[in-house]
Every structure is written in C-alpha cells, then in structure tokens.
Amino acid sequence: QENPGLPSGVHRLPPLPDGSSFRAFCDMNTAGGGWTLAMKLDGRSERFEYYSLFWTTPQLEDADDIDLEHDEAKYPAFNLLPFEQLLIVMEPLQGATRHLVIDASAPSLL
Image 1 (spheres, one colour):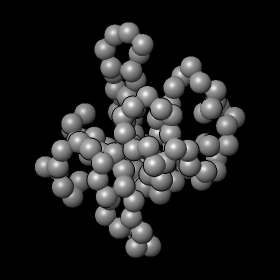
Image 2: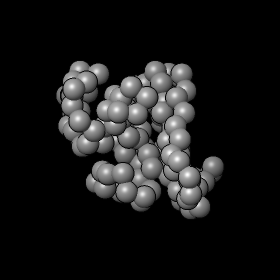
Image 3: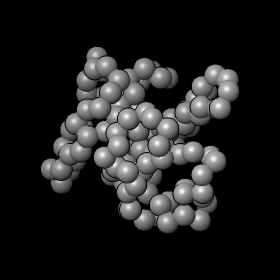
Image 4: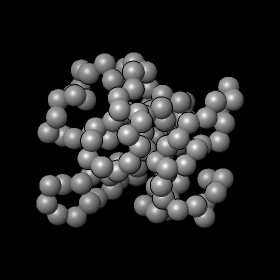
C-alpha cells in the first residue's frame, strides 16, 4: 500500500509496531495488487491438513523459501500482519489459475 509502483517480488516490509521487519513476497498485480504471501499449500499434501498445528501455532515452515515455487510454506506474514481482505490463488494441475478475494479482517491469520 505504501509503494504501489513496486514490481511483484520479494520486498522488506515496513517495520511493525515492535520495530521488527521481515522479507515477504508481494504480489503487486493480481486483483489490484498489494498482497503479501502468507502461505503456500499443496492440496495433495497432508502437511497443512485441517488438524495441523500450523493453523493454531506460530510455527513457521520453510519461511526462508520466499518465492512462488510449488513448495509448501508458512511465512511470518501469517502470524504478524493484520488484514482486511484475503486473496486465495488456486493453481490446478491443468487449466487456468484462479483467484478469490474474501472481505474479512483480523489482527493476523493466526
């Protein structure tokens, strides 16, 4: 939101209220841009199944692997960033990538 002219890619996010910051992949194109990658999931995997502790604990997974490759990951953005909308991007094995914007707000996804 602060720099809408930046290209999509890995950027250091502005400091949080506690003064910390972190690197995150920012999508500056899809649905108007300004999206921060919080998780990457593979529906064929059981790692992030419904009862996984990843949903209810701050535990990160492959957080240094900041890209759009098809590896599963959970990033600091999941635990730290407040939001007013969620962007869900789905890549089927065959066919066009689709996305869904959901109006919802919370202090974080955690």
